[in-house]
Length: 419
View 1 (cartoon, helix red, strand yellow):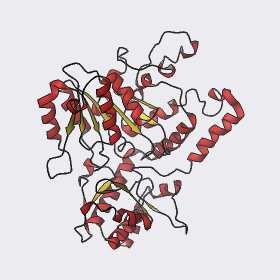
View 2 (cartoon, helix red, strand yellow; view 1 turned 60 degrees about the vertical axis):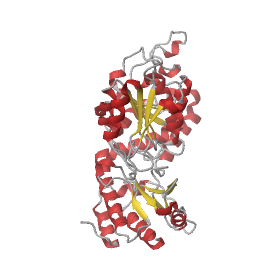
View 3 (cartoon, one colour; view 1 turned 45 degrees about the vertical axis):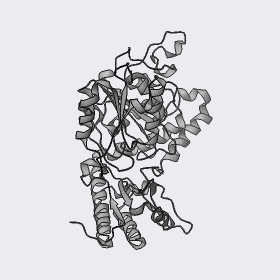
C-alpha cells in the first residue's frame, strides 16, 4: 500500500532502477533556477541531452562532406531512415518490415487512407470515436468529401454511454454488427487524447475484420507510452507522432505501420514518389515505378536528416532501457499519482482515466467541476506544467523516462493547496 508522505516518495525514487534517466534530460527551470514540475510529456516530451550531439554530428558532416555526406561519415544520409527502423519497431511491437519513419502524423494518415480507404457506393462509411483528436476528424471528413460522400451520412461516431466518459468495446461491436455492410474503415485513436483510455487494439481489429472493414489506429498518445504490439494486434495500419513520449522535438517526424499481410501487395492504390521506388534501381532515374515492399513502400521523399537525428537520439535511449522496464515503472508511477489525488478531500475534481493499468498509459485526465480553467492556470503559476483540454480536463502525464515519484508527490501537494 502506498503512503502519502514525502519520505515515502523519496524512498520510491531510491528504489527506482530507472531514476538515473532523469539526468539524461534538460528539465526547464523558472527565473529563479527552480525545476518545473513537468507533466506534459503527452504534448511535448523533454529534450534528451544527447540530442544536441546527434544533430551536431550531422551538421559537422554536412560541413565536412557536403553532398558526399549521403555516402560518407558515421551515419550516411542515404540510408539514414533505416537506422531508426529496428528500434522504432520494438517500441510499437512490430516487425522492421512493417515500420518506417517519415512525414508527419496527419500526412501519414492521409497517405495510408489512399491505400486502405477504398469506398464503394454501398460500403463507404468511416467509424471514429466521438471524442477523436480534431486532426483525425478533419482527416476522415475530408476523405469522405474527396470521394464524394456527405460527412453527416458517412461518419459514424463510437460514443460513451450517457453519463459516462469512457468507451465500451461492446458498443463498437454493436455499431459494426448493425452497419458493417456499409462501413469501409475504422480509424480509432489507440489511446484517447482526452480521457487517456487505452483501447483493446486486437479486439477492435477482430470486430472490424469480421465485417470486412479495414482497421487503422492513431497512436499519437500511445507510441512510447504503452506497448501496443501492433503486429500481434492485426490492425491493418497505424501512424503516430514522435514529439510526445518519444521526445524528438516540436513538429518532428512521424512513424507509420503497415501490417506484414499487406507488405507485398503491389496492387494497393498509393501515391508514389522517388523514395518508395525500389532502392536498387532508384538512381537509374528512367525506370518505371517499382514500389518497395513493406512500410517503406509508403515513403515519398528522401528523409530530413536533422529531424531524424533527434529521433535517433531518443530511440537509442528507448533501446537501452526497453519498453518492458518503462511500462513497469509507468504503471507504478501512475498508480502512485492516482492514489495521491484520491487522498485529496474535495468534490471539485475527479479522475476520468481508467484505473486499470492495462487500460491506460501514464496520462491521468483530471476533470474539473464547473469547467473552471483557473485551477490549471494556478498550477502553471506554481511551476506545475500540465495542459488544459476543453471543456473541463487537466491532462497530466508522469513520464517514466524523466518524472520522479517526488515530482508526483510535490505536484499533488500543490494541487491540494490550490483546492
